[in-house]
Structures are given as C-alpha cells and as structure tokens.
Image 1 (cartoon, rainbow, N blue to C red):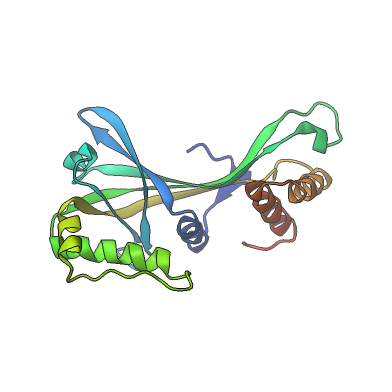
Image 2 (cartoon, rainbow, N blue to C red):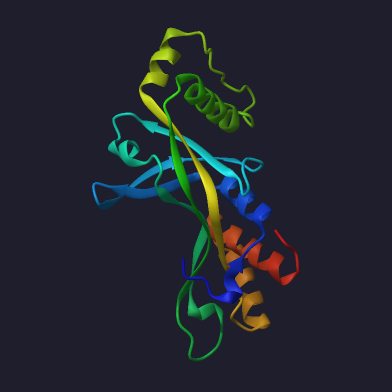
Length: 209
C-alpha cells in the first residue's frame, strides 16, 4: 500500500484495535494464476506466533480455499472514510480529497481441515459478535445441525508477516485547515464522516486513538 510518511500508522496495538472494530475484511489470494477475493469477517489472535494471527472460515463451495494453503495472502480492512470538499478549507488552490483509515495484513495462510479446530473458529466467531448483545445467542455444539454446518465450511489461519496502517487525516495540511475540516465533518449527517472528524480532532489534540 502506498503510504506517505505523514499518514503511516505503525502502532501494532492500534492496528489490531482497528481490525477488531472493522473486522469485515477482504481476503485476496491467487487462484488458478489470477487474483481472487472473498469478503468475510476475520478474527485476530494477538498473542499467536511472532506477530499475531488472523483466523477465519469460508464456504467449502468457495474455490478460493483450494489453493490457499501455503500462499502469502493479503487481508484488507477498511475503517471509516469521508469525502473532503475544498469549500471547507476556505482557501485558494485546493482540491477535493478523501480521508480514511485502512489496514493491510500480509501473511502465510494455512488451511485447517480438522473439524474440531474449524468448529472452534465458528464458535469464536459467534462469541465475538454476540458478546455485546443483551441476550447473546450461543451454539449448541452437540446439535446435528451444527455438526453438518462445520462440514460445509473450511477454516484457515494466517500467520502475520507484515501489517501496514494508513491514517489519511489531512496531516499534510496546515493546522487551521485541519481544524476546520474536523469541525465540519462533525456536523455531517453521516457516521463515517463523524468518525473521521473525531479521529482528526484526536490527532490534533495529540491523542493516540
């Protein structure tokens, strides 16, 4: 990913936090000599290996898994993003742009054929995405339906070898202009725009979030 120095984010804990907050990613690999991508949620195991690990599963009917084992793959996670109109700058010789947060993860993929290990990944998915609900739904692992479901998916893990973060938040503009943009984003009727405005304000205030 092209990352100018002003936009680079290298704090691994912050990058993992962002992946967990925006975990619906894009898994890109090679299939029959061409690029192939699947949109799917991925879980982070921060303590695994030297640099952490991503865990996931996909439908067995998806051909991508058939060539995943041993491949170096790319997982893309898109955070909040927002259009920036030049009118907010109140300045001459400016152009429109887009501010955004993105994390790219590279790593070696291992396909998991063991049904118990795959079932654990599925259970971890459910626990992760249900935990904030008032009455979390749970899996009954003894049910025949769940056993059948596990046979229809393929688990995988990605040992992270490189992780990159890009926080494009107008850091290349003067302070006064950045303050104007952050304020105007906060006034927009759009959650992503509001979040980008909050991140810009936090950066201006010297915070690390």
